[in-house]
Length: 247
Image (tube, rainbow, N blue to C red; front, side, top):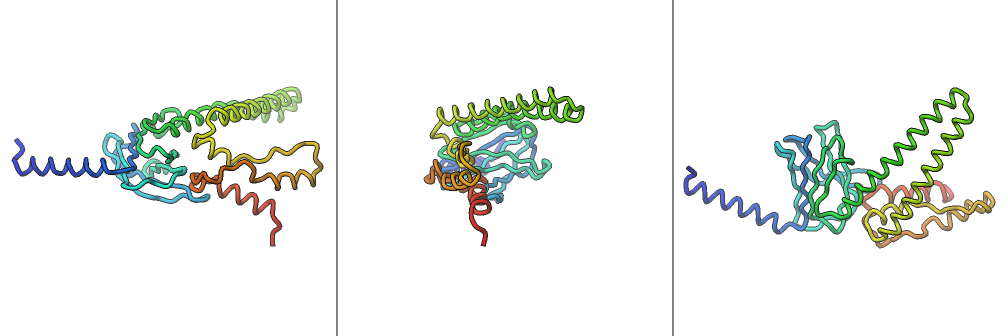
């Protein structure tokens, strides 16, 4: 039987722990079925680099939590597992900063289930859709490579047509996604990877100036979440390296 002082101490510890978490504006908890009693690092992007923010220890059931009294900067974050061959998974920190995630680290895209985060649920639904397009392209790229060696022109052309159709289907899906979810974190972030579509009727020189003059069209510069993602530096690097005179 627990003695009175120990019982009181246990209650007080529970009370204070509950108080700490109840005051936390940020509560990101997770449970991974193939993670056991090991460190979990919370990281974030800034430009093209990744930085560590904090580290906690997952328990024997793979459970862990990051909690903070103040809201985090929005952006693309990651959970890094140094004991698991340096595997990591990405997720959004957006308006929803109290959520949980369960899944299997070795197959996270297919198994991830988020509770309390609409943006991350949408993100991984999109990631699964991308896998479908990627698998189709890899299949036809393999066909093209095989028949290119054999010299089978008809089969190579069929593979090229299938690859183009897959690309067109993805573009249709993407535009439909943008139309249905214009205010989602994912849409705002993906738009920073969009580039101007150049009219084919223009000359080569006109295409260059058209591309440059329309390069920054359509971006939502009030969206600060892009700063903590690779998309922002990629955008600026392309413009500075490829579209400005180097001196």
